[in-house]
Length: 199
Ligand code: HEC
Image 1 (tube, rainbow, N blue to C red):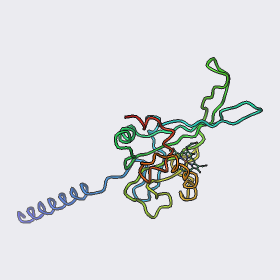
Image 2: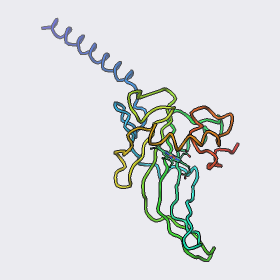
Image 3: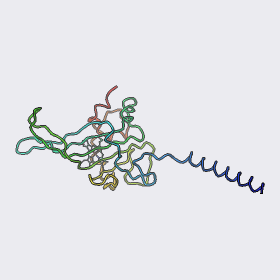
Image 4: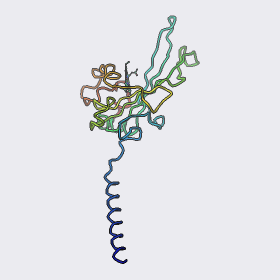
């Protein structure tokens, strides 16, 4: 009986140590909005608590009058801004969310054509990946994970291939990027984000 207890204790000790080792060595999930197995990206739940990187205004001419019909509001984590200001590059795990908003224009006490946002139209999400993760996913590559979402589904992207869906439109950003920017950071339209230029 005694011998049996000793063996049991030894087995329990080995299993506990082994489980602890596995847990300690298990790779930390990359980000809460990235599926660790497939690399599927979703819109981060808390992104509206993040600082705004910048805003793009889309204007059209209606009967000779300019009206603002859309805003693109871009958010990122506070740590990403701090890191970029110091190191002049985006850190691994930086998430950039671009919210597309419908807008209306009206005359207000501040001016004759003042725009304001109304409802959300969709989201673009970029995730900086300096390690070449998810090589078999067509939504990861060139240093980033790329996805677009319609307003009614923040979990499932409608993007299928970033090389077709995103790259052609982000190629002009390369010529607008600071000359000394990192190769993969040149996909980003940083000229619209003066907060990154500080320091
Ligand atoms: C029609 C052209 C076009 C397409 C398609 C496009 N982008 Fe963009 N994207 C832009 C432009 C131009 C900007 C900055 C100005 C603006 O938003 O109007 C931008 C900005 C962004 C931003 C904010 C960061 C930055 O680069 O300034 C994110 C995030 C983004 N795009 C993600 C994506 C992803 C992901 C895809 C593919 C699913 C994609 N975009 C497809 C043209 C495009």
